Length: 347
Image (cartoon, rainbow, N blue to C red):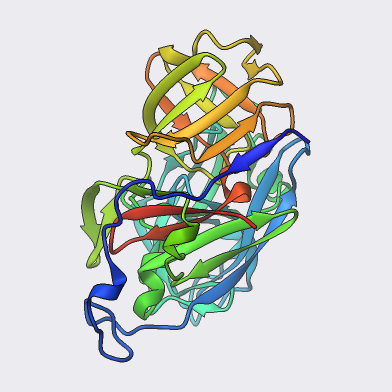
């Protein structure tokens, strides 16, 4: 296994200093009811080193339908679930509209359907009230990516481990849908964390901020709007700098649990040695927050999907997608109130 290092340090600015004020029992600074964190079990389909890489899934229940697994994706926002897994009609708890809900994912799979509304249950936890989601009626590949996960439609996608995709990113996507996590009761909607290990992991709703001494990096996000009283943040615009071999570049970055490899875009990385699009093994990678003197994440490239595989994707724009491997090396906490992403090295 290639050498891999993650380091704790003080990187970036903490937006909120929790010890500076005294809060009423059972309420946060905004007066929101404080709820005990809820842990949702994450099951990893495939795994690091498998042909399709590690694909995290969670159990989701829509209205009065049965619970089904869906892929857990930090790279998109909003639940898109196949209509084959959702009861509609009287006593279903689901209200279906005629408003289109369409989205195309980076992998080339396109889901089309309509917007619907229901109470969403993730693991054992329900949203506080009905929320909008995408009721998917068709799934297929876009022409330039004919071998995408939906090459055989919804039935083919289900074989890869899920009846849709639960996007828990901090912005909106695909027609304005947002993460159902923002609809959770009390402080469960204020923060969440995700971590994976081997073939399991956990999504923690209402996650507490990790101790300052254990934090590897604190990355601020820019607010880009709001939804239902919750701020929305540009989590695909995190400012990171990456050195790979002798190449170095800083670019907007996304921590994406729905992608099996680290993906690099932009001219600064064009000189890196590759075989096809895959970066050759044995090249040192170091990642730091923009402006930080030292990297918080280091590893050596290899051929293991979801662990050390790095690919080059184009030079027209600069962008970094960490892929799912970041969630194996770190517990990643999203603070929707403070607008930060905090990375704590995994034990």
